[in-house]
Structure formats: structure tokens, C-alpha cells
Length: 238
Image (tube, rainbow, N blue to C red; front, side, top):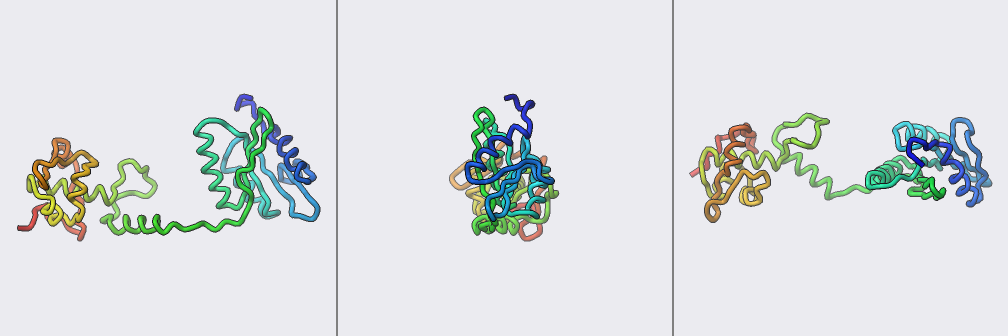
């Protein structure tokens, strides 16, 4: 079935069949709910149908949680990596919202339940928290604008690389230890050896200079503030 021909009503029969096989009595379009299933004295199950994931689908489902905790969203099952990624992302969203998630494979009516409704308590990542706070502490000033795309953002790593680059632009070929001392970048040796931006080249053991790309970049990029809030021109202390 072509995606343009899919209708929300195409999802109903397979979902009704699944719920009835589990002992529910199922009816559609009850009040504002697309699908309502009732089994004995249990809380009702509500399923909201859409032809694809959308903000309005989740708005509707959250509104139904005022009636019951057993609320699912259901969409047609697609194909390809993009759909699998959307399932992964929306499964996580459903867990956060306490919603269930179903997909319906329209060619044969297979209904797959990806998530059941349940209270959600996010598990905190100490590693991610530590990494976030480390980056916050290392980044000097507030050089970015909130909401910007990731490309071209100023990171603490880039600030360190710029300090090393400008130090070499002023001092010429320098021992890595001298660059570290002049800039306050403790990992200057590793940073220049990794050469992520292509700005550095090792001219002798432990001695680094700017590559042609680094020389051009030094003319284009202003020196960032020193880690202690100042910039001394990059001259290493004797």
C-alpha cells in the first residue's frame, strides 16, 4: 500500500483483532478516543491512531492519560533505516511519557508492541554528567549562541587547539612542553600529535610547528582567551 493511500482506519482492524485475542471488548471512536478496549474491571486501554509520528499524536495520547494509564500510540510500520531510527527515538519518547507504542504492518496486519505503558524514572548517567560538567568548566567564556547547530560550535577542545596554534604562530617551532606552559593547555603534546584540525606538524622529536593549513588558520581565527581569563600572546616563559 502506497504511503499516500494509508488511512488511520487501516490500522483499526489489526489492533482490534490483537486486543480481542487478549480478552478485551473493543470499540472505536468512543468520545475523543480512537480505540477503547475494556476487560472485566480493569482500567480501559486507549489507542490513538495516526498514519505517522507527529506532535499532535503525542498531544492526544497525553490527553487520554487523564482517563487511564493504559494509553498506546499506533502508526503503520515502515521500512528502511529512517523508520527504524524513528522507532528507536519514539520508543524512548514513549517511555518518558509513560505511553505504549504499537506499529501495524499493513500488508499482513501484524501488530508489534514496542513499548507498554509504564511509569518512567530515567536512569541517570554519571559518566555523561561528569563529561558535561568537565566541558562546562573547560570552556572559557560563553562563545556560542544557544540553539545553534552543532557544526562550527566552539568547544573547549577547539579553544585549546586555537591557543596552541596562536602560540606557535608567535613563537615558531616550539617544544610541546613550552606550548603547554605558554597556553595552559596541559595536553598540548597529545592535542598537536592528534592534529584533529590539520594545523600542526612535528618538525623534530617533541617539537611542533604550524602546518601550511595552520598558518592560514592563524590569520583567520582570533586567539581565544587564556584558560585563566587572559591571553599573553602565546610566548613561552623562559
